[in-house]
Length: 263
Image (cartoon, rainbow, N blue to C red):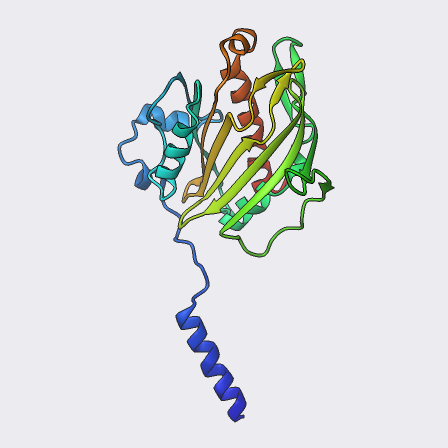
């Protein structure tokens, strides 16, 4: 009995000194963007969200005021991207509002990227963007490993490697860095090998970047994306790079949304 009492006291002391990580209650959209115009708000809550494409952008225009915001801004600008796409969207959830654990587990289903469709203008039909999608052991050991089962808790940081067989760029190799803060999850994606187009390097190693910030809100799930690429003038004259990046981000966002829904 005495041993149990001592054990209980030690346990309570441990919990008091090292509390389990807890995330804040869901914020509302208006709390994050109090000055958003009604026109932009309607677009953000629509099926396609609000999209801004620009060239040689210095300041991100829709980045939420989040702890990771300054780091995202710095990381994008350090890459000196020629093209920038920004999008902001809120996915409504009428019930069973997701938490960060559901968001994190949705981002872990790499194999479910396989076969997701996008509209090809040249073929005038929907085709799979990624013919294959596999998780890799590391950049040097590109052995295929399975996606893990759903996690029971969200790690503070994690790095994932993947190979996507792209309809246009062939085998494409990416590194995804995942981190969480008080409110949301940041998913940063970059290529750790060249993206090639007919054996010509279209986007050099680490010259494609995409940062997704995902936060469960009172109204649903907010997804902010910023993506960019540094390409040569020759490649830019042959490929509509902003469109190519936008389509890939749309597929990735759709993959995350379906994963949150459990699809």
